[in-house]
Image (cartoon, rainbow, N blue to C red; front, side, top):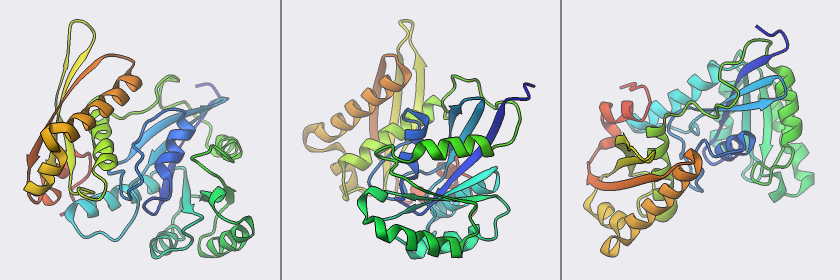
Length: 299
């Protein structure tokens, strides 16, 4: 082991829509987790690997923590806390514009009892008046004992250098967990499904918000170096299926084109993406479906 190398797991924790996925993507310098303006986008832990000098920062992007109702919700929240408890450091991301919501308060209360060091990261600071930031930071520091406070804009890549450098100094000495050129441990099949789901979220607006899930049914390598990928989008009702397909198939075609473009860009290879839409009422209560999303079924 090279004594100079450092490595640590850094959990990115926060309420839905705090900007966690944007932060992970910006820090990693590439797209490793989907970003959507809708809350509760991330459904499982995704690790992004960020190199900072001799330090390897393994970012664990967790689902936004919220009050769970469905079986799926319970599994998502458990994944979020699992990501935080396994880490060397937890970044508590708070939307500076939204302030201290019920969700933020609940997370703060739980983080206050955590054995993992917590850093407060106020995000979207470019969208609020600067004088309001210090009182907000002080209130949050009273709620959670934090070692460091950062004020950033993940979307505009502001304030991240200081966060990067401090994190690189904070992680323990040790060997790297991943090869230097490995960006994420997200399997290609899951990546394909997530990129399709991102476009579903973007293109169906509020009509089919979180009533859809995507699974990669098959991934076949072709002799010319390309891949054929078949994904199924599951929805709960016939009306949602109709919206997803669109007039003469225009919506599903657009979803497929955009997802394929993103996948090809990330994998740097040609991809033939085929989408299918199926009704499956109550999929978010099915044990098998939850396990297929990479989550633990908690019953």
